[in-house]
Image 1 (cartoon, rainbow, N blue to C red):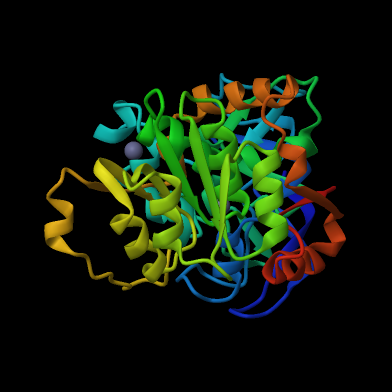
Image 2 (image 1 turned 45 degrees about the vertical axis):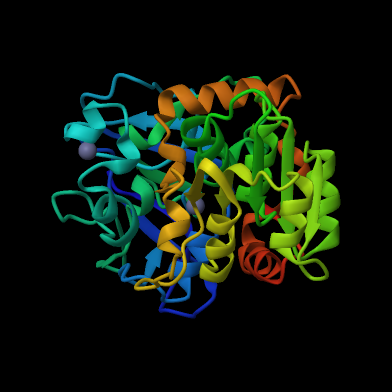
Length: 368
Ligand SMILES: [Zn+2]
Ligand SMILES: [Zn+2]
């Protein structure tokens, strides 16, 4: 039987989130019905809600869901009703990168997660008054009391950890952590620079603090964010509202440059400065996404010292391994995610979005 549930619907690009009753299909093969307990808001939700991506609207967004399994469809074996789960991105499970343990680079990643709005077979998961809405966002569309999720979006987690404290692991946090652990893999004594101290950047700082890197440099224009970065493990900070980035990094590294840089701002000028700040054989990870079609000019000869520039999606995480590990670190107090989170009732989703846009809140989490 179809399921009626309350969802935050975006009616058109630039419109607010408004609550509305929608209808979910009952779980089909490989699908899981999840009662949402919490859901993080991410800048990608705002980008799509603002009409910046070709996702079909009206539609239901949300891709950091956390909840309890209510029902499963045929063939689902990894979870059962009553399990606590986090929702992350989905993938086909069968292409070369999925089979190789890199599902964030699934051949069908973009339509399945970000812009398709429907299942892989083209059918919708959510409707209202008989009209199909955009859904299946990251295989979940979790801005709703109940979500119909792909089994591959679902990760079973320790039921002793409050779901509202770990919801952002599904996207923003594993992106920042993965940039450091999966790509930079800092060696002993390395210098890691994190450009931007939002949720992703601060997650990268916390992750770097759990590696043998000895210099961790947080960069931002907001003094309070840099103060928080210091509490989370940054050894140095650069406030670009009053310091020159290149000069400051030269000073901090004694002229050596950075072994690793995580670029989270999505600003191509900052990206260029990050590449210039790399040491020989240093790596810059591009995490922040500027508007589609953006380009950056690079000093080609400056790259010849073995510099690498690597783009990254979702931390290149294999979610079934990464997310339970992060949950454990949160539980043990070694990944103090609560420092980034502000909670809002689900009905206040639009206020949460405004607070994230204005920078008042680093990581809003909606409580259902
Ligand atoms: Zn996200
Ligand atoms: Zn795949």
